[in-house]
Image 1 (cartoon, rainbow, N blue to C red):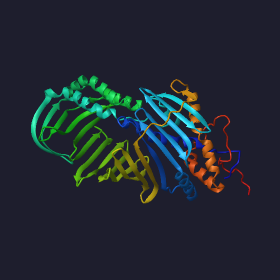
Image 2 (cartoon, rainbow, N blue to C red):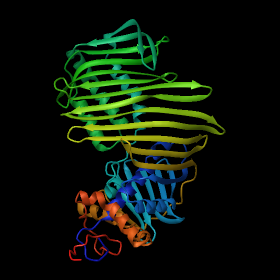
Image 3 (cartoon, helix red, strand yellow):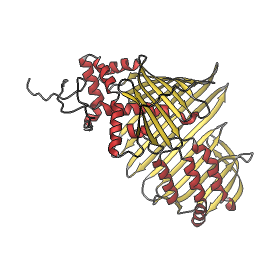
Image 4 (cartoon, helix red, strand yellow):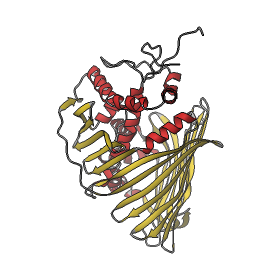
Length: 490
């Protein structure tokens, strides 16, 4: 392979950058919904790579050196998130996202390549998704707020079926129930109760999921609409010695989306002891099933708060089996000015069937939880058996701070009513804005190193035959483009 103007297979770095940029944006903008009461947090982030074996050694060292000079200035507050990407103090990219009601805007600036351009979108078609293919960012804050109302709406119609009973039922990790309220309904009674509660339940669920992507909201509404009972419903509310809710147990025969299932759910929670959830949803016929288990113990000893336990999520569907499981072992230790969070979180991913995959992930936080912010690192390693695949460390510092100075847009692109061709053009324009910077950086590398870096960047897309993205007018291969050598003679 060598560099030349003529190309047989173009390694399109624009789409590669689009994925990287979307990751940066998503990570920053996810902070925004949880900061409504802080007045805004500002800080910096950086990334280090300690291992990436599927990169050539020269590529790996070049990427390490490149990342060592990169830093990210962050801001996240109510209705606004922003970041500035710096390379050795030089501003490379500035992004500013705003939300007001159902409207979203994203202001992008790339000095020397893209003047401040504001892209307009909506909650269900955010500029981040339209431009970079990143999915709409979920805001889960409405769900906890909706739970009390949802619980009340469901329990209201069950009161006529309520029967009190003494019991000594123990919920693992949580504690022992001293009494329970039993509710036993036939399938007809359960369906009548559900239809009476459904209108109110649907409103509460949609309000609680207002910050989630449209596809999720539509799927939830379809599930509610197609839900019915095919067998007896048994609900037991488990109460502690003070007759406070400790947990509950539910068993029933149900049908959702036309599929008959058996429901078996046990859940319990107490802040002083722990959390336990056991969820089983096997098919009424066949081997398909969905199961989840979360078992966490909360302990406090000498001012050290400890969370320890395990979890698993498994699904069997048409012969394919997917399993996510792992252990949680986290501790918060008192430190001057706050506390220190350390420990480990493991994620074991297993897929068997049409696809076989084994991946082991390990997350190790070392974070100071200060009264006015956080500062620390998060290390992530990925392995396949004993083979290391990734070793990355994210450094982050956040504390209350003022919002960055606003930039007046010099251009606006309304993506809300734009035709598909215009959206695709805007996406290519935004993604290609960083190409001059990438070209400049790669051209600073020795030629042999540059060829290896570009080759490693494009390896996956070449394998998937995805290197045919159309360039914008005036864009063409240059000295940074890697092509196959078609010369066959020595």
